[in-house]
Length: 52
Ligand SMILES: [Zn+2]
Image (cartoon, helix red, strand yellow):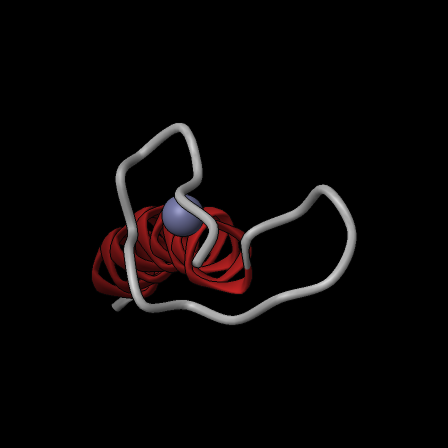
């Protein structure tokens, strides 16, 4: 059994990257994109309101 730096146990993987950690990084990146998209939507809503 291999333990990664984050202590994910019972994860079978080959190579150096732990899949659990890879998914965590992907998830965090997605959260960041979502936050940015939400901000953009708020800006656009504001703009629309000002045009009315
Ligand atoms: Zn891990």
